[in-house]
Length: 310
Image (tube, rainbow, N blue to C red; front, side):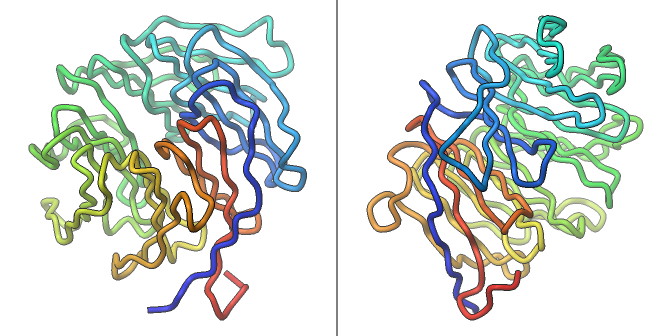
């Protein structure tokens, strides 16, 4: 198994509360963060020490999504509000009190936007107008995670009822309901880029790999962390994936064998002091970005130990 070289590039501070959300931005060398202070901040990877506040909402931001064609942001807050933030004209920002308890995940699906809410409801929005088109009650508990697979034409939804729901991306019909997928809430989901597998992480600290040829089947399971797995992301090249956990660590894995390659921890690697809440892996210099309860973000550069070309 090839070794990995991981370098800590910078640690970003400026938020005044836990950082829960990360997302892409207009330029390849910038990204966005959202936190418990209600701030949405733009960071430049070439000048990481200088974050710029671009929007503020009245309560904790749990999820964000950038719409480049509209120069707009969508932010989900802890009370279930969905903010449509006009970056050119912030005064035109709309907050739609749609969900309850929290909007834990937002994903783009072609001409539509999906939001997952704290009361178990999944909503489909028109991307161009910001109007809610359709809602479905999947569970009587919170929907914690979303993932979209273009290859499978499928949406995966993770719930606090321990289930994973696999939906048809066009009709939202339930293809499969994986009951007791984890022994506790399903906090994170990610499709492998080829669409052959779905990875899930739970509050039970287990990482599971689901084969999607026909009826979903768990083909790999491991106690990957000590506590909740909050986030799973694949590298842009598709060779690796990373997990972030409440145990303060990030782990990097081989995307084919699902074997552990690297652990990034507090003392040895100068990692986070508290829970790792969200990960974002950008194609720009293959930077992996982590966000934490310690109010900071860390930029990591990942490459094979004997090859700097990813």
